[in-house]
Image (cartoon, rainbow, N blue to C red; front, side):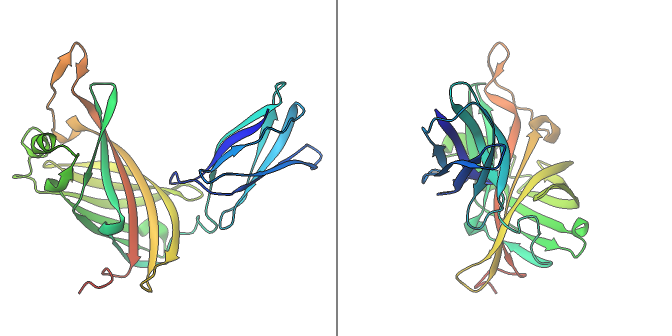
Length: 273
């Protein structure tokens, strides 16, 4: 009985101790509870069947309201509720921002044997973001060292560096340059750009979520973003395909790119010349 759900930020972190209030259709409060340290909401209070309004609040986040239906069992599933940081729909102040590799990650996920995933990351990269007064004119440029791939397995990494995949001797860098920006939601954007990978340049869109801006301990201002994209290996002439049994390849045909980015306001990082 009662309600169950999870409270999360857009980048997947738990919102601890968010307050969840349930009101009936007349606006009378019938239940009030808090999410735990993992962002989970669990209440065993018996509730009459019918529609209710769920209101979720947390300090620093915009309130979220939705309708929930309590079934004859006296239970309502509110699912995963995503809270948006207050002011999150506003982009960072215009100007140049520098990617901070120490507090960012560039990762990729591939299917393995059709049943699981292999995660990798690039450990050496850099770039800059230019936020324009007119947001659609904003730009991003990034460079990744192809030889910095790390999947946690030396033999696999050596294969990925070879001509079967990244061919780092011929193509040492992976670059991305944006060509445009368009709004996709209150604090979500689509970055249009061109990815140069393995000697091939193709248009690639990034699904971008802006996570907020805040001061850092060194007197600077930082902005955080999360972005994803899906690439097909064959689009970038990486056609290695070991078939382990009928219809199943050792490595999937698509890669999911996952970016968690912190950028520091200014043309250089703190302490850099």
